Each structure stands twice: as structure tokens, then as C-alpha cells.
Image 1 (cartoon, rainbow, N blue to C red):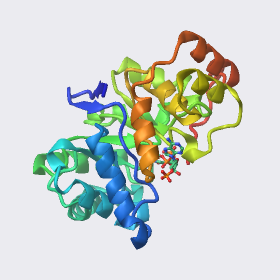
Image 2 (image 1 turned 60 degrees about the horizontal axis):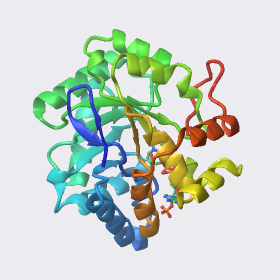
Image 3 (image 1 turned 90 degrees about the vertical axis):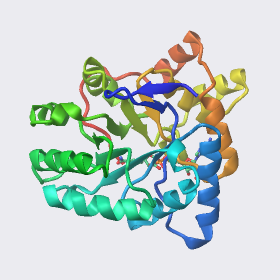
Image 4 (image 1 turned 45 degrees about the horizontal axis):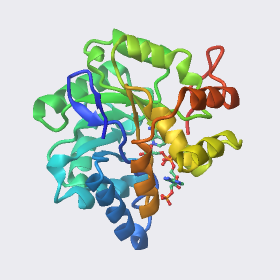
Length: 277
Ligand code: NAP
């Protein structure tokens, strides 16, 4: 598995696993736990979750899945913006740690920009690092202007990543956010990398997949993973999906494939509002 380097030198797998919609139904729990474990066995050891997902239920699934292999896993979780006050992050993080059955979250993200001043949130994150409850912090759903504001806040430059919607059909960030992060050697984390299983229609991904002996989802993941500084976090419960996603990390697209994708899904020609799900 190829790795991506975070600003503090930590190496994480370029392909991780998402958990949105996990933890919502008791009868699916065993399958969700098994899927995450299979993914970890295959090297997808970065797991992304959030206190929002099933209101803590997804963190519980993750906690169960990694209980026996915690040291090999890089855990990412997120705090609700309305919990992101100096004191609120302490309490929210303590609850997440309990559900995750761990003493430390490896990367803790502000889920989206909210109304609590960033100074407070960053100061709260710094306290969590001092206490050993998180190893580092980052943000999610921040556009380039929000990132600029963050970097003006005392301590803001310690941000490890920005997790945003990015896939073949959602390329707006290539215009401004991706170059902005690159200038600061900050990796980007791509969520909904296969658009929740609803990739935009068009034959090009299927055609490329046929040439490489894989399907359109694998092509879409390989397209993201061609960037040295992008981490993709597909969510998969079905075992065949987990395994197919892992294979996608070994797929190298040809320049002609990339050109065909650019024709079908053109890169942005101007600034666009940040897309979100
Ligand atoms: P996604 O990963 O793009 O798509 C997940 C869907 O695709 C599931 O229905 C899954 O089915 C299916 N799937 C997975 N692998 C497949 C494959 N190889 N072939 C065909 N279908 C496949 O969508 P997402 O869950 O929205 O995004 C991924 C993760 O990003 C989330 O789980 C979450 O951790 C994170 N996220 C963050 C934010 C944020 O605001 N920060 C927002 C959205 C998502 P099965 O589960 O049935 O296998």
C-alpha cells in the first residue's frame, strides 16, 4: 500500500476506509465489523469516522473492529461544529474515545465550519494534544478561503489535512483548494470518492475499466490515488467491495486514460463553491 505523508511526518495509507451509515442497525453490525477488519488486514489501516455517524454508533463499530489491532490502525474522528468550543471539544473527544475503546485518536477533525470562533477550537485541540487524547488535528469541508482564515489563527498552521468531497464528478477543488494545500504540503482527504456508489453516468470509466480488467469504481479510486498527496476513504460493507477497493490501489491509469477522463469530466475552469454532502 502506498503511503501519504502528513505535515508532521506521520505516514498513513493512501487508501483508507469510511464508516458513514455504519452503526445504524444492530443486525448489520457483524458485517460492518468484519468489513473493517478485512480492510485492515488488506492494508487499509486508516479508518475515518465521526461522532455524527449514527450519533456515535459508527465509532462503536470501529471500536469493536479495531480492539484487537488498535496499534496498527490510524483512527480519524470528527467533532460536530457545535461541540467545537474550547471545553466542548474536551467533552466530545472523551465520549468518542470511550466509544472507540481507545486512549487516543490519531487525527481529530472539525467536521465543518461552524459559528464557534476557530481560535477556540484550535486552542481546544491543542489542549487535547497536551493531554494525549489526540495526536494531531485537522478540518473538513473547509474551502480555500476558510483555510486561509484558519492559517491566520494562532496555531492554525498545525492543521494536518482538509477532508472534502472529491471524485471524478466533483473536481471543483482542483481550481483553488488543492493547489493551496499543496503549497503548504498539506495532504487532502477525499470523501465520497465514488459518490456514494452513484458515480456520474458516462461510458468512459467502464471503457477504461474493461481495458484494465476492473470496474468503474476501481477506475474512479485509482484516478484519485494517482495524486501523491490525496488520501481516499471509500466506505464498504460488502466484502467484495472492500477487496475490489484494495485492488484499485494497485491500479495505474495510463496518460490516455487520464485524458479520456478529463474529456468526460472536465477539470474546473473557474472557482466554484465547495461541494459538500
Ligand atoms: P463512498 O465511499 O463514495 O460510497 C459508499 C457506497 O459505495 C456504499 O454504498 C458502498 O456499498 C458502495 N461501494 C463501496 N465500494 C464499492 C465498490 N468497489 N463497488 C461498488 N460499490 C461500492 O461514500 P461515503 O460513505 O459518503 O464516503 C466515504 C467516507 O467519507 C464516509 O463513509 C465517511 O467516513 C467520509 N465522509 C465524510 C464527510 C464529511 O463531511 N467529512 C461526508 C461524507 C463522507 P456497501 O457499503 O454496501 O459495500
